[in-house]
Image (cartoon, rainbow, N blue to C red):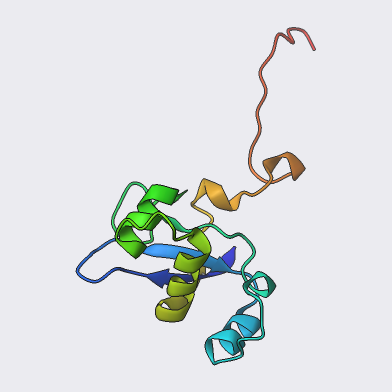
Amino acid sequence: MATTAVIWSPENSQEEFLVFVDDVAEYERWKGGATDIALSRFVGTFSIMKTTNSVGHTGQLGEVSKQEIQNVFFGGDKNKHAEEAIEIILKEGKSQKADYSHSYKLTLNPGRGAGSVKGQGNQQGR
């Protein structure tokens, strides 16, 4: 499943932070200066992700904590929020289309058929 993510790294760091973009055309218009476009028009989930088990964006993805956002993006300023960090990533990052299905976070609702669910109960002889 090909998905577009905008990837940003802090200066002098190998960490990469990702924001997923649902509508690439709207994102490109916003990045080009169309400030009347709300982020909610092209960002589906207001979460910042990063790999939890390797460097770069190719490992298992996990959501970044509020504290880490404040430390990495704003030097510990507790008055800043994830939306402001998402804007930094969208403005300064590079978009990349790839298969990010290796991350459990992209299985948004496994109860609706995505993913593998195997139940084992006491069903002998059936």
